[in-house]
Length: 101
Image (cartoon, rainbow, N blue to C red):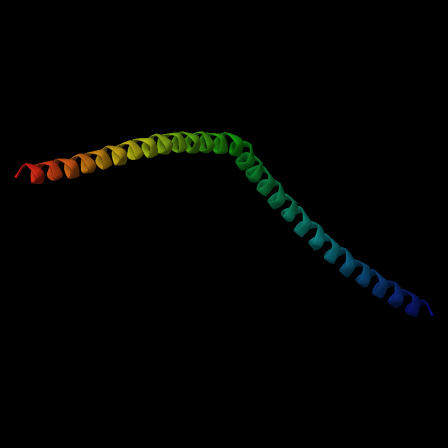
């Protein structure tokens, strides 16, 4: 009877030891994951903290480009009007020259 109790206790101890080893491995894996997640969080926090400045500069650059583009559109319109007037003047000049011949 004593032998059966000792064997049962040994089996229970082995099962508990096996479970403890598995729990220890799981805790170690969780600790590694925690370190990785903390590192990822730090990196993403650093990147996101710089984002407003970066985006603000890009928005300012975009506004400047839009303003420059509008100026160029106005200049293009003026050049087109000038070319239209020159074409009209040329056409009128050629008509006048034909009449004089």
